[in-house]
View 1 (cartoon, rainbow, N blue to C red):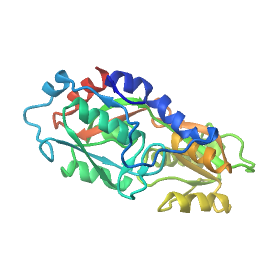
View 2 (cartoon, helix red, strand yellow; view 1 turned 90 degrees about the vertical axis):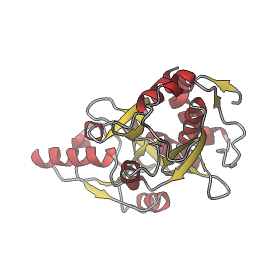
View 3 (cartoon, rainbow, N blue to C red; view 1 turned 90 degrees about the horizontal axis):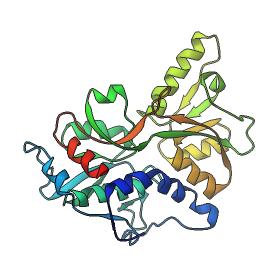
View 4 (cartoon, helix red, strand yellow; view 1 turned 45 degrees about the vertical axis):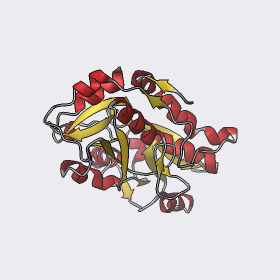
Length: 278
């Protein structure tokens, strides 16, 4: 889709668009890995959002909106064919926000575990990388929410694991999870509940990249992989060898939203919220 649209329209369509991208392989389509991103959605400058930026706030680079993103895999964020440009749903959203603020987007690829320190130390203005809002994170950061946070439980297609909906369903399983993520935090709580109930503990496994994680799953070294839902839907459609056995709210046991993340009290969050909801 090309042309201009409001950020409210982008917000309302963000999750649907992400899942549509994730399932594109089912229709024989290819994920757009071109660094130019000719089909990217664009947004109009939002003067109300611009004036809501606190006068005390200083962008990392004048005239630019510097945003950290973790290229964890399509459809959320991955590298283009030039091996340096990050493309996907999160970069698309970051681009639209930058345009609404009248700024040029500067994307900074980071490892997921590094974004909190980089943000608090002022390396970038914001993080747009599937960050879920939690009470713990609210103590350190400000948030501007834009879609629901959802993770997926996926297993090998021939796995005997058929459903994971609550802690006891995961007892004794070897589960691949990202370090420092909401998924890890929740699964550690699940493990505590299971152990307290006399059930087998969870075995959490950590790998450096997607390929290593998928190899561990396919080889039987792990039983389950937990990642952002859209990423795993995309992988399942692409590889045809894993299946979903459950989903997990990023705020389990409550709903949680994904948000643009900024430094606590920086004075940018209100402008970002206005831009999103305009």
